[in-house]
Amino acid sequence: MSATPSSARPLLAIPRRIGLVVIALADQLGGAGMLLGQVLVRLRPRRIDRYELFRNLHRMGVRSLPIIAATAAFTGGIMVIQAAPFVEKYNAKNFVGWAATFTTFRELGPLLIALIFNGRVGANNTAELGTMKVTDQVDALRALAIDPVGYLVVPRVIAMVVMMVALCVIGDAVALGGAVLTADLLLDVDPRIFLSSALERLDTWDFLVGLIKSLLFGLMIALMSCYYGLATRGGAPGVGRAVNASVVASAAGVFVADYLSTFVLE
Amino acid sequence: MRSGLTRSIAALFEDAHQLGSLFGRTLYYLLHGKREKGSVARMMFEVGNKSLLFMCVTMGFIGAIIAFQTGLQAKKLVPDFSMIGATYLKLLVRDLAASLGALPLATRVGAGIAAELGSMVVTEQVDALRMCAADPVDYLVVPRFVASVVMGTVVLIIGGFVAYLAGMAVAQMVFDVNPHTFTNLSMVTTGDLTLGLFKCITYGGAIAIVSSQRGLATFGGSEGVGHATTEAVVGSCFAIIVLNLIISTLGYFFVPAL
Image 1 (cartoon, one colour):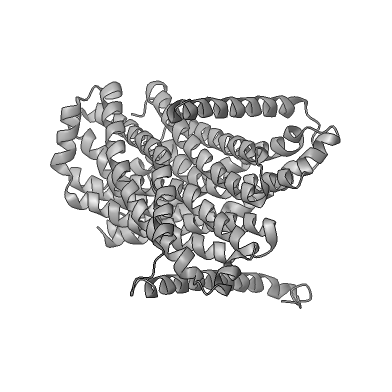
Image 2 (spheres, rainbow over the protein chains, first blue to last red):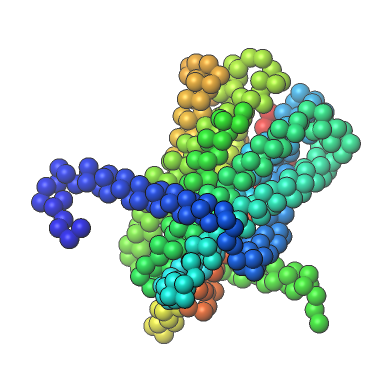
């Protein structure tokens, strides 16, 4: 892009910008898709560095537990508060358990956990891979005949997908606790009534939809953050830019995946 | 030896103190500071115009999802969809447009602020400012705070509008609700609008303060900048969720919904 004809022809400036955006988008989506292919190829026969995998599982999952649990507890509380006016108006105390947990399990729980996970784990991951890239550590791996995708990317992708699902299960439980507590304190709904209403009207599918969604979100965050990390260029400022771009792209990816899966998993 | 729990509680109080102190200084300089000309406008462009497209896309998807879920839930309780538009609008105005929109906004704006301030800290530009007797809070934080409060509110309102349109499209396509029936403002009260606006303003301020604090506390080179960015995004999102619970509880008592 050495020549910039847009200044000479102002009429072409807008289509040119749109074209550049589309090309950049196609570039990033294609890059992330190819990374997915490379990861899948390395799963069979299994070539995963076990130490890296366990290190990442611990770092990404176990260390994110406090913030995820706190988020989930607040989410449960917020859902009850949002349902509260309707409960009071229609005196539907035996519906509040279902109303709060239905949305939390199916939609808000996985979504909010994914956004926090994206900020904590995804951004961190891009920063780490990006720093390795700009300090030539990735090339060093290659020079030692160690495959960077197998050594760096595959354990991270597996760890993020597994831990996202695990955190979603724990988050659902904590959110239920937060919702029960809020309903008891704010609306005087007995915890037993709350739980029986939730258990009666929810089926396993509502819970599973949340888990499938969090699996997709985990995969999305993992691919985006690894792709942007390995595509980092331009020294230390480049790492900052890569982290920024990765967080935004993952968030957008999570919303798109959420939209598609909501309609498919009715 | 102190246990991990004591240490993390101590860290929590430390964070709260730091944030409160930064907020106080920002308010002080907001009234007494001597700002660089044009910096607020530049930041507004950064925060507002540049995140508008991203916010419109995400809010469009969020709006479609919420409308779908609301419809699904309503179908199990009441057979008719005549009030779905009104209920949806009320939910959107009262809470969801601000609270759900603030999370992608925090991701976009918070990461940007922390990365920018963090790089300035590790390249010692902030120390250079201090050497020139210019307080970094006055020169760096105040413009970002003002821009985030004003443009954050604007972007969230536009996002809420996009979410409403997306919800209307979903209601028409999936549940066969006529757009005329869907456009029903009867359930939205002045209280709802006030509550929603208050949330937008609070979230905008929280994003700026949390991310600036994280950015200014950066240490340790380019890795430190990445770390600060991470903490800024997580911290802002968490602050939004906590503030949402507090404001919604207050709203439940003081701004009755029905």
